Amino acid sequence: MTALREIIAAEANRDTFPAARAFGEELRRRYGPSTAGVIFYGSCLRQNTDVGLLLDFYVLVDSYARALKHPVSAVFARLLPPNVYYHEMTFEDRPSEKRIVRAKVAVMAVGQFLHGVGPETFASSLWARFAQPAMILYARNNEVRRRLVDGLASAVETMILRTQPLMDSGFTARDLWVRAFTNTYGAELRPEKDSKAGELVDMDLERYVAVTSAVLGSSFPGSVYHHAPADKQRAVVAWRLRRVQGKMLNVLRLIKAAFTFQGGLDYAVWKIERHSGVKVELTEAERKRPLITGARLLLKTMSRGGLR
Image 1: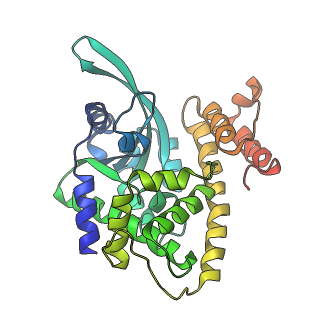
Image 2: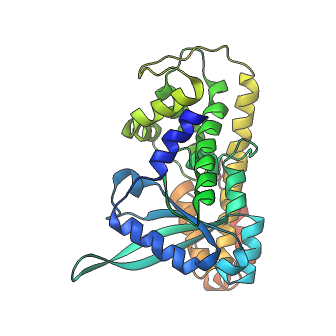
């Protein structure tokens, strides 16, 4: 995995635009001494801007209790990680030019994160997300940084090895990654247009060719990989199970958000409608009973086909 790790280490340690750097520092301060690392990823990283977008971060902590300072939130974070929050900060692009920068922030124990991006984890949500480019904006020390780089490299390798059995002999790196992202989109509450996976890969095709080469061999941009498909049917079944599991976990996390932070129930309803097409109207009485309403929300989503 040496070649892959070198690629990921260079990727994780590069620089980014000032607003993202500043927000990373703000998150390190906000979550305090328990913060082991801050990882930046997602559309803003790919596009190198946050204008009109929402920054995406993972804050990796040693202790939920110390980082979150809320016992109920800490319990649910341990049971169903990560906890996801919306944060804002004022940022000054130029002297006297201030604006609001917004971010979606997932808080997760560093050990749970490292386990989740590895091959021992069946669910695809973490290793699929971090098989894409990511940056380590903060690491407490060199040992933490090493572990995070290893974790990011493991996510890439896991994504490739989980997808390869689905491929017929004679596929390119692009074919592999388009299939991989198509499958992982299907395992979340995030319907995407058919072309989305291809657009994502083509945006950074050289990178995806390089990491595929590091795992499967061959260094030519147009390399075609030949292999005898083994256990293809087992892999197909596994991905079908991930699809069901992933959608269920997404809904459960949204329900958790409904009663672990202010405004969470409305956030859950908005996310479900946005990503599954299921519209649920909440009454004021329902908002006052987030736990009961969250359970009913799951049943409504399932009955209306939102977990297909």
